[in-house]
Image (spheres, rainbow, N blue to C red):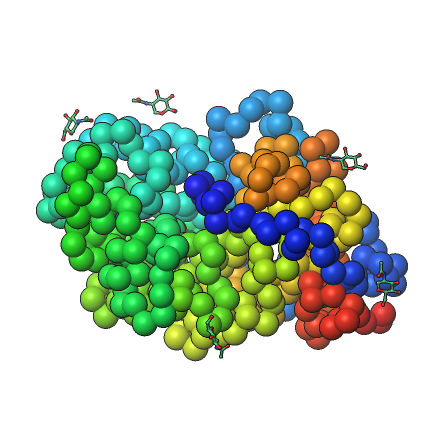
Length: 405
Ligand SMILES: *[C@@H]1O[C@H](CO)[C@@H](O)[C@H](O)[C@H]1NC(C)=O
Ligand SMILES: *[C@@H]1O[C@H](CO)[C@@H](O)[C@H](O)[C@H]1NC(C)=O
Ligand SMILES: *[C@@H]1O[C@H](CO)[C@@H](O)[C@H](O)[C@H]1NC(C)=O
Ligand SMILES: *[C@@H]1O[C@H](CO)[C@@H](O)[C@H](O)[C@H]1NC(C)=O
Ligand SMILES: *[C@@H]1O[C@H](CO)[C@@H](O)[C@H](O)[C@H]1NC(C)=O
């Protein structure tokens, strides 16, 4: 995802208060530190009762210098791959109705070559569209021809070996309010295709027919999970989260998409500062609400900037990431967890106002594992050992000291 820089502006005062947290990696008895994450995943899957997918991003046009390192990590850390850019609309349909799935299929092949699974991201988004679109098609062409053709070609082109597809990405706006209906939630985004970007201010599409077109097409051609993916969602008592529920209800009722075929992707581009991430209990409440409908929950784009390059901040990052892992592991409907970008120096999140010193991934700029990597490994080991769920460590030692068992 791009374009959320403005959302993550951090009040200066908050940056100073990093809670003192308790971590599993402090306890040598729980943490063996030697295993690689991927070697634990089969045992995670045993407890889950189904294959657990823990992944990261790749593109076949990524810099060659990084290739060996990345390849090593897809053997030892991740068992799941998503294309960061190679499956987006600008790359897969460079000319109207002229498709090119080379970069997208290349990532799927890379997954196969590493014994990993592949997920699709994405068939419809307002950003990274081909230059011939938008502003160059009528509403009826868009809904009846352009979207169905694109979604069908991409999904059927990649075939059945895809765990889940982000059918629509970031439809909902950032200025939602409680009580909005699904269309109002999407309209509040105030961006294509709700408004034209060819200079006109007339809305291009005045209802959710474009979303129904994408989903009903995906339903026909994809046997896997169909996902609605967005950022700044997951908190309880939150209007954007409510909008997600309104939207999936609308897709269910109006586009005939069964809940059992749906997933909701929580991008989880967050910050290691209080108020800049979703606490574990709220994530789990939201995931449970989806489970009750029969809908999957996925963490799709996890990364986490830190305010300062200090031990306390790196520990806090480890605690929050670990809690997101636990929220997914201990929720019955969460089977996929994707980390966005492989290491700090290749992340799309860079240091600057609103993102502190960034450092937002599991591996530092030299490719070495950070405390967050070891804590994530320890959370997987603990789950694989059939241990009960822990308290939310990101809340700090006043709320949670991890068991020394
Ligand atoms: C962090 O919490 C632990 C356990 O309560 C305590 O021993 C330690 O002094 C605390 N550290 C700081 C920097 O507050
Ligand atoms: C398809 O995309 C690939 C990768 O970007 C490129 O090398 C190739 O030339 C494209 N094919 C066509 C027919 O444009
Ligand atoms: C608009 O689409 C038509 C085909 O539908 C194409 O020939 C034309 O080049 C496009 N215009 C732009 C500005 O891309
Ligand atoms: C929900 O949020 C609103 C406004 O943010 C607040 O006034 C209200 O007390 C909250 N309700 C609950 C149950 O937390
Ligand atoms: C963070 O601090 C450590 C220890 O001082 C240093 O080695 C490292 O280069 C710093 N990383 C960044 C990205 O500033």
